[in-house]
Length: 95
Image (cartoon, rainbow, N blue to C red; front, side, top):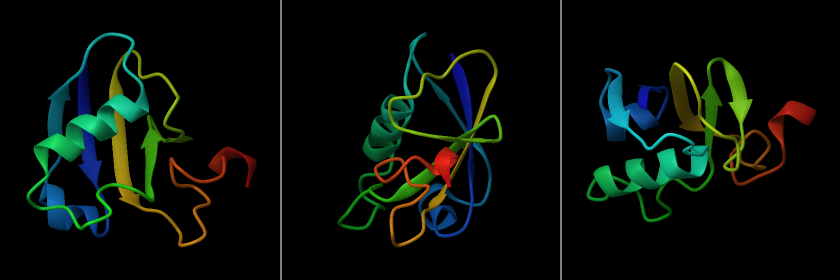
């Protein structure tokens, strides 16, 4: 499946200002997307990697265990410091 990744905020420093497209296996999760991004950007990421990044999939907040399916546009940005809205923090949909 093709995933179009749109960088926002500080993630533009790592991804560049334009969207990138990644190929992921059918049934991939948000965690798989972040893993592929971590490998692709290893030399440009800060020490904590993508920890604390918030992700939306097709304009909805997403957690690491959320599946990707269909036409996917994922946005990536630094989540709030308390972790709310980040894929490794509290469920953003509940806030």
